[in-house]
Length: 143
Image (cartoon, rainbow, N blue to C red; front, side):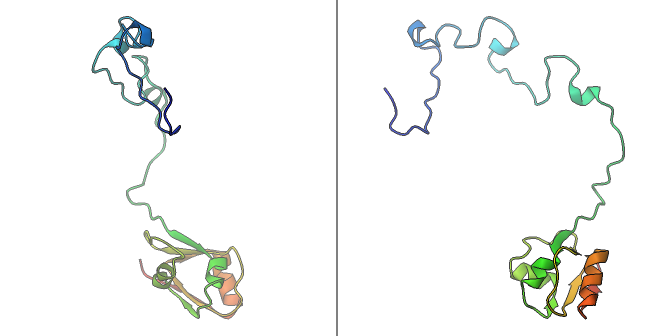
């Protein structure tokens, strides 16, 4: 019997007699760790062989705890807003950025059409030069 909805796959019915094809050992084979009830293996387990995450050397220094991750905005996104002053709050209100992480960084992809005052926590060199070339200001905010 087939189901009317094809995306609902029928679960495999185990241990329901030899005619079902999933009887007797219930698709577990004979003996061994995987045939037992309650068997679970953790991610990365390789059957007792020394796993990859232990075979490879650990190198370098990880500074994620103190790393500053900026929310990034390009000049082409700022140019589409048609505002004279751009702040992180305006960008959030207009839906340009969803979440301000440790601050806002303005990058230089795209061009501005008019003079704009941009307030952000960081600027790339190209973004700063393009803003000032149009007669605008790049104002650094404190973190």
